[in-house]
Image 1 (cartoon, helix red, strand yellow):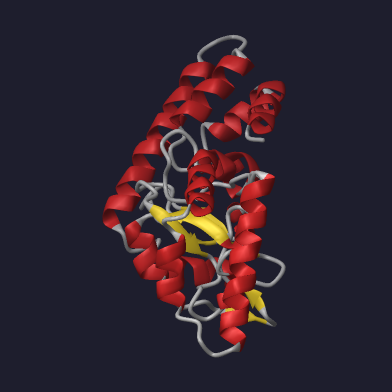
Image 2 (tube, rainbow, N blue to C red):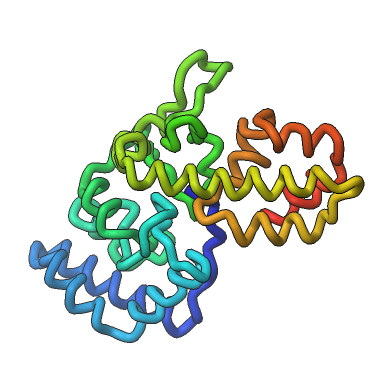
Amino acid sequence: MRRIRRLDLPTPTQRALDRQQATADASHVAGALNVERTWKSARQTRPLKTALGILRTMAGPRQRCMYCGDSHGTDMDHFWPKQRYPGRMFRWLNLLLSCTECGRFKGADFPLKNDAPLLVDPTAENPWQFLEFNPATGNIVARFDPAANDWTLKGTSTVAALHLDRREALAASYQRTDRRLRSLVEAALQQPTPDANALAAALRDADDHGLLGWYFEGTGNDVEPFARLARDHPAVWRRCAVSLH
């Protein structure tokens, strides 16, 4: 899972979605809102097609699912499920790009604590504050919080909801990306003075699954060969870290 910068909608599109939400809200108050029918009809309109296009742009050139970062993103997912929270059905901040499998796993379940989501929203927070990558298995697991002496609750809930530690094909894809990233760093370390810009660009291009966030912003910074890069070439490390943003 990678951190994703949310883009703004064009003003006409945002206004159109606001109008659609207001209409849905009025129907809901009147007890006449059919959520699935309303959404299915709206999906054929230009504002929702524009929103989907922007989500695809946000997801990068490969247009991968914003949850698993592996499969192709096929449709819009409601982070707060629309059946349970129809008041967020047309809210731009509630729309993400999802693959079919992640959408099916996530479904309508939406754990909360003190009215706050216990699932990671990659467009609103850094996933690697709550998640870990296990290079040995390729699985995404919950991050351990030493202060609480426990696994992060949001990480645990996210892994469980999306089955991130039980998808063999997904784990294999993460491991392939990890091997490519390690090979690039190993090659750079063979040079007396690694080219920081070239390495940063190569890493970004090879990072299909957002693992650079774990290496440079999460706990992966003590894993070789990234730990050696940080120790022996701190300026190159900083350049690569900055390039993530």
